[in-house]
Length: 220
Image (cartoon, rainbow, N blue to C red; front, top):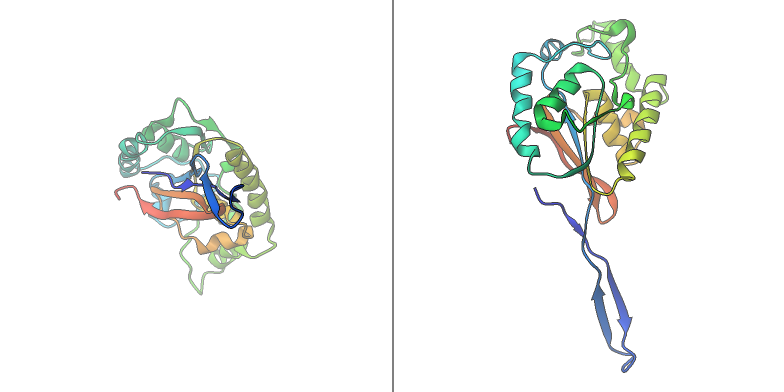
C-alpha cells in the first residue's frame, strides 16, 4: 500500500527577468496514515448485541480472520501501535503481529452501555431499550461527549508521531474517532457504519483530514 505524497512548490520570479518564473519543488513528504482495526467477531457481535465494556473473547472465526491481517500489515511500517485493553481488541492486535510492540491505550475502550449492555442492538420500533441505547448518539449526550474527549486525546498522540499509526479497538469508539478526525461532532460517528474485522485508513488530502478507506473487510 503506497502512501500519498505531499509536495510543496514555490514559484519565484527570476532575477534576470522579472516577467519569467521558476518553480522549485521541495522534497516529497509521505502523508501520515492512521490505520483503524476493529476487533474480530465475538459471540455478541455475531448475535447483534450491544458490547461495551464486557470483556468477552473472540470466536474461533474471529481469531482466524484476525490472523489474515498479519501478511497485510507486515508490508507496512508503523511508528506507533495502540490497542484497547479489552481482550477482543488485544487478541486481534496480537494475532495481527503487534502483540510485542503495541501499547495499551485506556482511551480506546468501548463506551459503556450500562443497563443496555448485552441487549439486542438491532433497531426495533417496539423495543424501547434498543431505542434508548441508540439515542446515545444524540448531540450533547454525555456518552458521545465523553467518548469524543477520549478520542481527541488519542488523535493528538497520533498526530504528534512522525510516521504511520495503527489502532486496535471497537466499533463505536472508532466511529467517533473517524468523526473527530474529520472535525465533526462525536455524534456524527453514527454515520460511519463499521463491521467487525475491518481495516480502515485515515489520512490527509492536500493537508485536509480525510478518509482513505472505510469498512474494508480483511479479505480485500
